[in-house]
Image 1 (cartoon, one colour):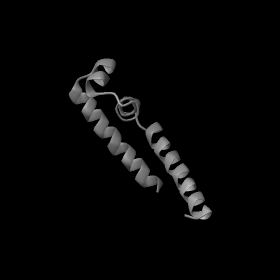
Image 2: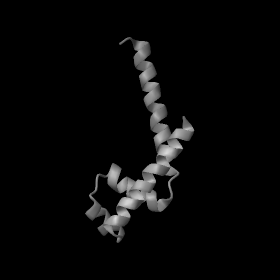
Image 3: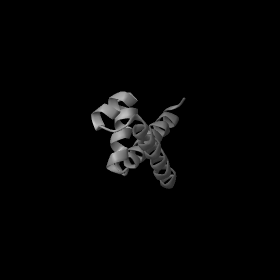
Image 4: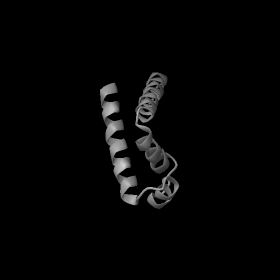
Length: 78
């Protein structure tokens, strides 16, 4: 790879990171919290439900909704 291609990849990665951060920040707090705990902090469903005092099913529902909302935000940003 030449230097120009590497610079373009770095720029695209920075833009993607910014879009993803914006999408996560725009989530409602109840979804964002579960998303961060499960996907970023790599907590289990059991750990997340215990920390938030909600059911495991509710953890899974909130995570799915967070992912759907974030995906919609990313698509709109492209």
